Length: 118
Image 1 (cartoon, rainbow, N blue to C red):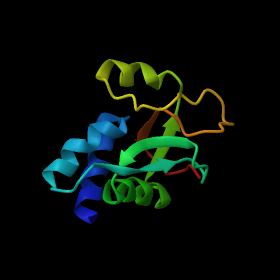
Image 2 (cartoon, rainbow, N blue to C red):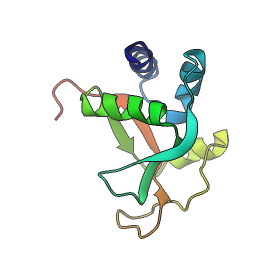
Image 3 (cartoon, rainbow, N blue to C red):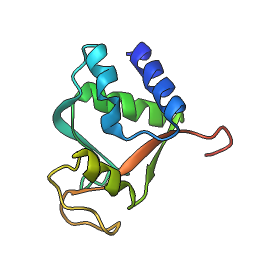
Image 4 (cartoon, helix red, strand yellow):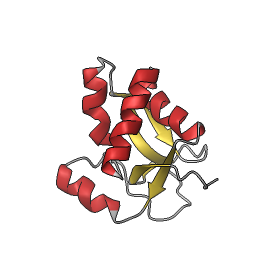
């Protein structure tokens, strides 16, 4: 799994910002399932979903890189435009505010964490 994490970091570094779905070919190449029945959420709030229908393995790679302070997960409402164009919007309502009462999607990109950032 460490080899895959290194490839994910390299991909994000080369692209500057990466939408999570752009990582699927790396998982396919490593023969690790990318799409499943789990979801990653923000700050333990199960209603704020940023990675919809991932596998334990694909979710773990993103989660571990974040917990190791190697990547940042950046939310900006304008990211939805690219997801719409790419046909990668999950079947969830869009989270318009921080306070959501049902599972809602938050469009994000992944970036390499700045060395000086917390």
